[in-house]
Image 1: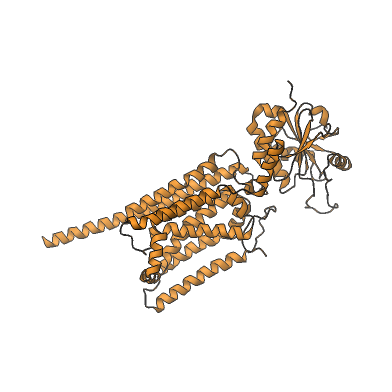
Image 2: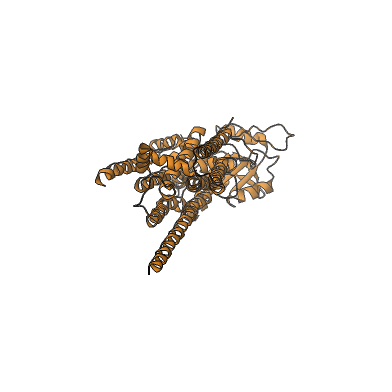
Length: 278
Length: 216
């Protein structure tokens, strides 16, 4: 039984494969979320609205798609470009949605735990979070790491987990309300996300402009499509830069408009108060 | 600020160190190829004093016959026994060699012959051979011939003969030798490139092999 997608070394065919480990992992996250939502309701917190629920499950669906057949299997052992799509989905797309979809009560209760807040304040400090993200991006794209880890199910699972956890740490200071960071306003958050677009430049450059295949795993994988190993690698590099850029710049744009709306609302309110007073 | 920022910088430093440390990780096959290169100068497996390259004539898929010794005299010849329905080893080898041949330029291309001998003549018609090889490099030569003769050529080279399943099945895999054999000009050595040879290794070895015993 194959539990998790890893490089198999056999020719690719489009026959569906079952990966029960992926289902179990996704199932546990879904059950955990429902339990949290139930607890929040039982504790008299604001009920989890449909939008929040949809946001979490949207993130979970993206995670599932990235881990399961065919994306998971193709990325684990055949195409570097699909491996990159997995990275974008697991580290950059799923985590912010899942964090934004958590019941409000979860953050409220977390905020009441002093030790948890202190730990989170440290780990998700923007400087630390950005360093964690940078190391995750570089480390998990090194040929030595990819070629060694992706050939076993445990190694492949570990890499996926590092991406997911790295994504949570990276997005936490941007989307999570706990701990409060008054010194990290929207403007700085936009700068933080911009720095992340810079971080992925080095792997992008290596992958896109390298004149030799970077990963033995994908170079020596049974061919899947008509593209060469080098073209596959170039697509992977471009996906890292452009795909990652689209995600991060979308987030920057959303932050900007929210910030603009808040400023606008604030000045309108101040204006009406001043008018009322006058 | 000062009290809390110090540990943060320590953590950032440790994370960066971990990243740098990971750069040193290398797959075991890479270490083996590196060791071979240190010992022999080649990343492929070198056979010393192998004698002259084999003397055989087979049918050329583009028409006519192909005499290995005559056609590849004073040239680097890369000889491989495979089949076009192969799902992995054959297309990977051909693709790698084609990419590196392009990298090494016209001069290298002019002094090198890549010869693919089919071990599955039932499915590998001359047209299919030409078309399949042309997908990698139109200069690659496709040969076919009597399976018994091809087996004996492989045995003489120290390669196991192919194991083709009994006739009848529409789709089947053929067990075959996975090494490409390189005969440099002058035949002073012979180098075997097993499945798993990276383009980096090909590039490292082929330029040197093409220059061996060249006309001074």
